[in-house]
Amino acid sequence: MIRLKARWMWAIALATAACGVSAAGPVLRDPAVPEAVRHTRPAPPSEGDTLKALVEAKLRSRFDAADTSGQGHITRSQAEAAGLGFIARHFDTIDATGHGSISWAQVREYLAERQRSR
Image 1: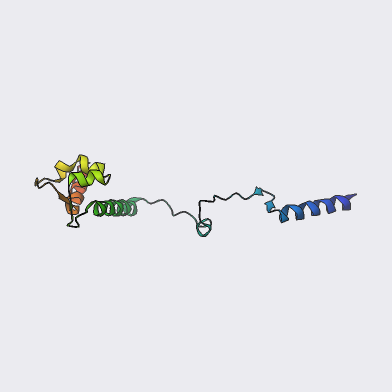
Image 2: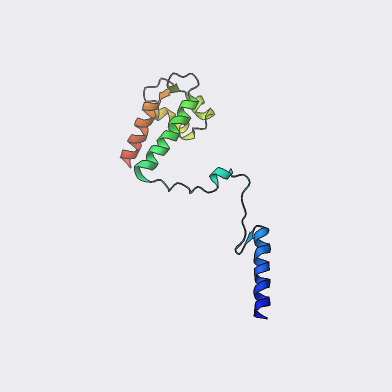
């Protein structure tokens, strides 16, 4: 009788393995995630100087995308159109000279000044 149970257990194990079902249950995969990325580990969370550099790089790329003329300056309307709400809201303060456009250097200077004042 014990041998019969062992055979049945063996048969069930083979059948479930053939169907792709593990002891823990079927492996569910998100079809939207490419196969090459499914087994990669996420990057560790950024903090400190690394986080600051990532944020600045992202903001810079969005600033450059807003600069449709390619002259290194953007206007308030370009900032608003690019979704740079923070820059658009503080545009007059950043544009201390009153030229009607701001450069990336002025944005960085404004952000550093805000950081110092905290």
